Amino acid sequence: MIDSHAHLDFPEFDVDRDAVFESMKNIGIEKVIIPGVSHSHWDKQLQVASQYCCPYALGIHPWFCDEGCSLTLSKLDKLVGDKHHDSDFIAIGECGLDKHHHSDWHTQVHVLKHQLMLAKTLNLPVILHVVKAHNEMIILLKHYKLARGGVIHGFSGSVELANEYIKLGYKLGIGGLILNHEARKLRACVTHIGLESILIETDSPAMVPNNSLEKRNTPLVLPAIIDEIAKLQKKSSVLISEQVRLNVIQMFDF
Ligand SMILES: [Zn+2]
Image 1 (cartoon, rainbow, N blue to C red):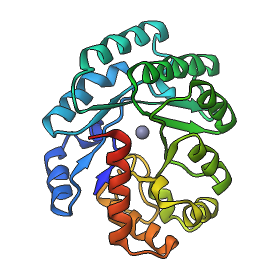
Image 2 (image 1 turned 45 degrees about the horizontal axis):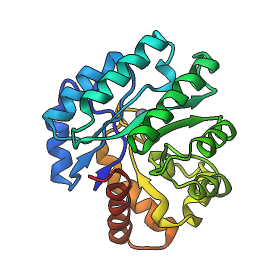
Image 3 (image 1 turned 30 degrees about the vertical axis):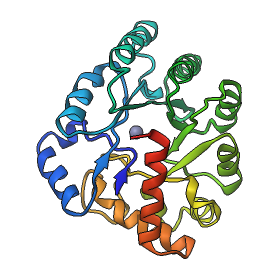
């Protein structure tokens, strides 16, 4: 199993990161992709990724795009240039648009466009965070036409919306929300979309499962996500697990 999106560099894991990686290994989680968030996170992210052999993405999350925007973008350009030949550097992101967050909308669009351009120039896929801004995102993706597409991480939309992204060459990151039976739109979507368009992810430490006593989420919830997708798609968990593993390897080429 591969977690296509987990922030294992975040401080929530500082006390027991070794143990978390060990438990992951014990249940067959072989890799975790660590997405980038902001320039104040990159150093530690790179250190954790290198220590635990994780593929990683570099980018600026829309929640952090107000942090000295133009200076941060040039720092990102420099870092991406430095890491260009590192085989563990596999994508740009996570970047995107979030209308639920207070960060300035025009800055969000500006910072996203810069990163879409970076992905295009370097021929890398993107990891996208999209909240209440799908129309705007789809217009941008049609404009930038990234050859390698990317993933709409933490997808929670309808099958129609999923198909719009799939047509443009994107995959959907399905996470712990699928375990919530109230998430009817997402569950209907996962029942009907092609398995080749699904990546699995936990977004740890965020997205703590509903019934959990834990304060943080961990990649250990991946088998439950696979089982739920299997139930919805009326296929075996082994088949789902193998196909989503192939999907993530193919998308990010590691
Ligand atoms: Zn994330």
